[in-house]
Structures are given as C-alpha cells and as structure tokens.
Length: 404
Image 1 (cartoon, helix red, strand yellow):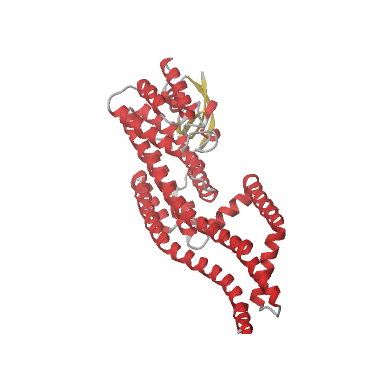
Image 2 (cartoon, one colour):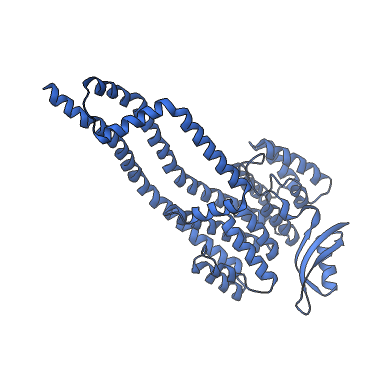
C-alpha cells in the first residue's frame, strides 16, 4: 500500500496537510473526499516531484534526442501502436544510449503490468517531472494520445526557443574571443619586430607606442601569470555560482538587468514559465503540483522565487496573479492576463496566449540583435586593431623623416 502526501481544505475552508495510505492515487482522493477534505494536491511520497532531476545535462539524455523521442512517441500512439510496442521501437532506434537503456527497462516494467507513468518515474534523469506528471494525468483522463502530442509540441517549442537565445548570446562571445586572439597574435608576432626596429633607431617613443610595447612585453614574459589569474577567477566564480545560493541568485538578477541581452533573457524565461504552466493546466495536473514543477524547470531562481510565492499564495486562498503583479520580473501584461484567466476559469488559455506573445517577442528580438551585433563587433575589432596599428605607425613616420 502506497503513502500519499496531500494538501487540501476542509468544508470550513481550513487548509489541511497530511498523509494517507491507499492502493492508488484515485482511491486516496476518494478517501479524502469522504473525510470532508477537498484535495488540491495528492502526491505519492516514494517519488515526489521535489527530488526529480529536471535537467537534460550530465548523464541524462540530450534535449534534442528527447524532443525527437516525444514527437515519434506521439506519432506511434496516434497510429494505434501500443505503448509497449512503441517503447520497444523507440528504444531500438534512438541515438541516445541513456534513453535507449531507460526505454528497455521501461518496456520490461510495462510487460510486468506497471503503468507507464510509474515506470518512467523511476528514471528521473531521463524523464523530467513535467513529462511524468502530464503522462499520469493523461492516463487518468484517457487522453494519453492528446497529452503526448502536447508534450511533443512543448519540448520542441522549448528546444527551439533555447537554441535561439543560445545562438544570440554565443555570437558576441565568439567574436569577443576572436578579438582577444587577434590582439594576442599582434602582440606576440608583429609588435616585437617593430620594437627591435625602434630600439635600433633610438629616440623617445610616443605614449601610445610605449603602452602597446609594454603590453607586448608583459604578454610575452608573464603570459603564464595571466593564465593562472584567469583560471583562478573562473574557478572561483563557478564554485560560488554552484554552491552559494545568494551569489547564484544575484548573478541571475544581474543577467536579467543586463542592457540589451537582459530583456531577451527575461522574455525567454517568462515564455518558458507560462508555456510550462499552461501545458500542465491543460493536462489536468493539480495546480499546486504544477507550480512546484514550474519552479524546478524555469532554470532561473528569480522566476522560481516568484512561482514559489504564487504557490504559497494559492495555499492561503489568495490569487495566483498577486505575486506576479508585485514582482519586477513580470511586466503588467503577465499579471493582468493571469488575473483575467483566474476570474474567467480559462487560466490555461491565457497562459498559452502569454507564452505565444513572448515567444514571438523573443524571435523578433533575436533577429534584431543579430542584425545589430555584427556591425557593432566589427567596429570594436577594427578599433582595437586600429589602435595597435596606430601605435606602431606613429613612430614609423618619425623614422622615415629622419631617414629622408
């Protein structure tokens, strides 16, 4: 017999938490209703959503492989192929070794009579919480085929959105390293040759030339020290980013408030949050459970903190939109449309519309940034190279004059 945690309200409206033993989740809900408790969340304690790994990194499946799996799985189910056969087929043809291994184990559990949602729940590194809970809701409502289509659309959409943002952020980073490489090449290969010439002719060098020559000598002699300093700073940053929650949160706040790119990251995070919440609501996942999942999958602690506040608000009987309206992260559009959705009973529809809007905004922002970044970075590269060339050419004019 399984043990379920529950959150609900009595007939008098008092919030009540606890555990209950039952064979299935449906029976647990029925028992709570007989006791006069209206359950808002019922979760099995053996494998709750709070200890599941949402990440697609590390030892788990790559995001693009999971997207392909979701789309193919939905297609096979819609074609009338059983879950067992679909799992066997997909295990044989997926490129991901981790996913193939998990699907083979899931197939064996399905053949022994275990429900699909319970089977995949045992592989938290492969199947994220949103997938498990939406599949479970689809099994309970008898709409598993529709749920799988929705999941396929969701993961495909999230993958495309992630790639767009990554490509926009990666472009200036790559160009930045190109600029550094060009500068190092000039300092190590070109400037030293002219330094020898300047020493032979003697004379006082201009300040700009002295600066470039000194930088060249420092790079040639103390490059190892610079490398050590860079490695130390990066290692220190990564350590605090992973192990210090306050530092981790502050970095995400700084990223969201960063000029130009901060707005893009903010829109992408809002789109991800609202799309996830809309998909969960549309699949009949309990609202408190849905918010707990969203808090984990947003990938941004600033957004996650607001979602947690919204969850606490709901437990107290307050509206979901209130914490959104009080947070600087969410524009008024989000809180206002969320409030309308709560009042009209169409919260999943309103959240989907918010997600559509911000996904379109991200796409437009990406296109605009790409068109602006390229000339801007070219100007920076030209300015840096021009500065070094100018530092070399100024004393060259003096040398030519003396020779003439």
